[in-house]
Length: 235
Ligand code: ADE
Image (cartoon, rainbow, N blue to C red):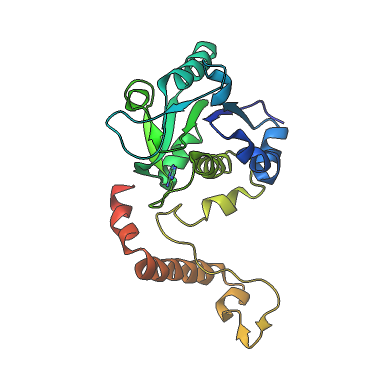
């Protein structure tokens, strides 16, 4: 198997929440076979006080705790002293929404840090001084950035050649052409009164391709008309 291509360092407050994601699933296998290296860092290991605090109350008042600069800088400065990073990404609901083209781009890089927030947020100076990109995985708020980091990692790692068995299946995914995927069927031909569309069992590949494109367009028009506007801009 080829050498490690992509290294992802995930810096977070609750590393245990990533255990099953990293050890099972396709990502776990990709790690074992050396196509990707994922290293999780616990911010509490970089706390400077004996109680391992990594957060404090916000200046100006308000609810929630803010992750402090010190442990984040201690961890990320150490990583940066060991290798060069292409991107240092902060996962946050107020980031730029994650899109397939961003995953494609990230999958070609060599070293990435993902910083997962927790509590109310992180000190703005971390964002100003360390972070190169801020990404949201959707318009909803998770309890922590770990799940968001897992989502991003999964979406990126599966694009590395050889990680998903069938390269074509990755290329055919929803969003790859800027459109949603067409419907899929497998055996049997008839199930509970519903048949597989004739064209898919007819063996005419040109017609099948045409049907799939039409179905993709129909579904995209109905569910995500915004995607059609983006096709021209490549976003
Ligand atoms: N942390 C909490 N919610 C998030 C979201 N929607 N995207 C990225 N990081 C988050």
